[in-house]
Picture 1 (spheres, rainbow, N blue to C red):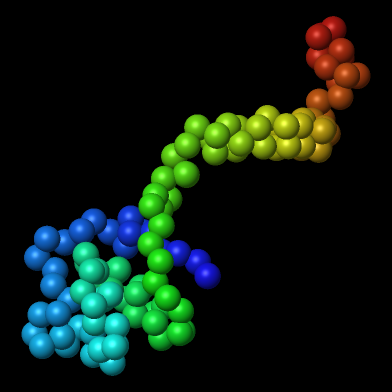
Picture 2: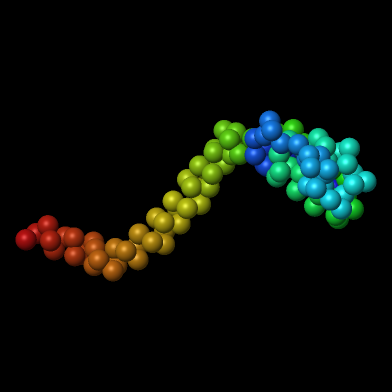
Length: 114
């Protein structure tokens, strides 16, 4: 069972009422009327309906994608850059580029002597 994050579905809409218009937004999900009434915007309502359609219960989690902005995530990607991508560039791409540009130690010495 996975939970839903309210922040994933946008900001609360103060004028949103899922039960307005005789509940046309919740048509087909009348047994879950009380839970669907707690939706704060259309995105949350649709997500809740998808859960109910699968026979699952709706559980809300607290923080959504807040973990993405944590410094640990940035540090992790920085470490990948420093310890995986840059060494690969130095070991694979730089020699191939030097060969393609004819930058060998002998060619460099020849240029310096002229």
